[in-house]
Length: 284
Image (tube, rainbow, N blue to C red):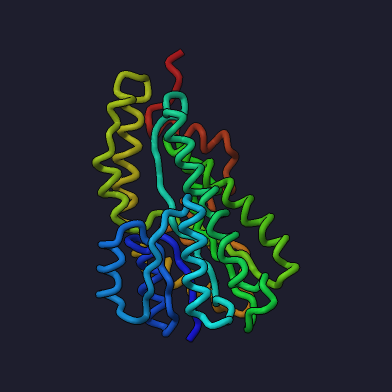
């Protein structure tokens, strides 16, 4: 049986990938941070799933998880590693606490490197392992190519992940390990319930108060009408198994306007559209 490691499987895209991959007979080693999530998913997916309890920013626990996987796959290479775990910290960059910005980069970028380094020997860099080299799937975002106001920290982490992925892909040609980016737009996940309850009081006495509220309402509406998590899971399966994968797969609802047109229009035009939409035009 082929095996894949997927980070952040408790909900959302990670759970969608877990559901799709196990339905195709692929064993998933999935990371969660809480033992109760490990128990819940084990009950849901049975012996097709092995929980790994770690935070992607904790090097020791990630390496212990890699050792656990190594002991169970009997000297074979993994089919792939899906770097999915991530967080989103919103707020205007002018006022966002540095600690919050740093946490965003630590989880969404540094954590991906920690996990990648730990599992690379099980993907083909260790010549003692048997089988074809595996693939690395890095879950970026439409926000990794097009930045929105009030998600600057998130977009900074995802723009960086795109560059990280491109450099890594070119380096790992040496080992025959491919690196592929998945770039989702809005996906229906519990993150929107968390976003709705986000404390924005830190910014209520700034000039961004009204604009950030408009943006949050817009993001909630778009998010709750986005793709189901399983749709991204199906795309992850394709990236792992297709003979000649692309280097990047966008999956964006309203693809023509929110992706194609948004990438074709001049940046200043997009600036003006967003400023008008969210009330960011200068009062001067």
